[in-house]
Length: 253
Image 1: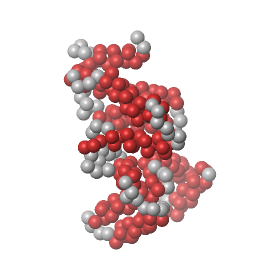
Image 2: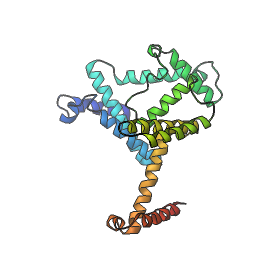
Image 3: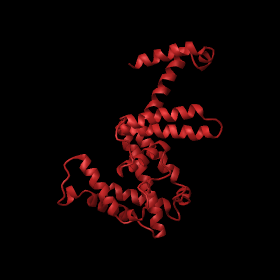
Image 4: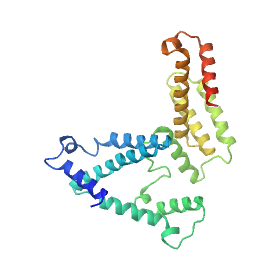
């Protein structure tokens, strides 16, 4: 028995009538936050280039896949073999330049072929809009990015970067002029415009903002340390804080 088979056996044992009470009461819905959490922890390991940790976190992600497959198998919906068969079939179908006689010599050609094959698959034909099928549960920045990419594929896009750049300025002016309930609307439009500019610059906004968050947290901790802690920082004025902030930035240069 290999390790994957043993994992399947462990999962089945946990779900058995005399198995683990916690595992036995789980459902697809109750497991949703764990799948999301484990995925983000794996991404953190990638960002940190911590490969031993990534191995561990990928195991946790795999557990979630196996757990959902076990639940589905008990209901008679599908099993892990069907999950594997489905992805193998999909990969071979969408890579005809590897598994058939088609030719694709560049990554862009591969992506174009991939999207064309997707449009020919069952289920895709049911979509009425180019932006259908993008999960609403995605983080807002990531969903905005995908919506814009889909629209761009059918020609709904600026011809050059000056277009989305000017749109950011336009939306910022509208934020300045907005009041009351309209302010949330205009701030949303501004964020959407910034995402579009990032897309045009080949920057993934979700990851760009994550890295900006990390920089801010790292620099703020440095500012706190220079000030002797949060109490010392709270006794400073903004000008003094700014000096410490610039020093923290310089330390990273």
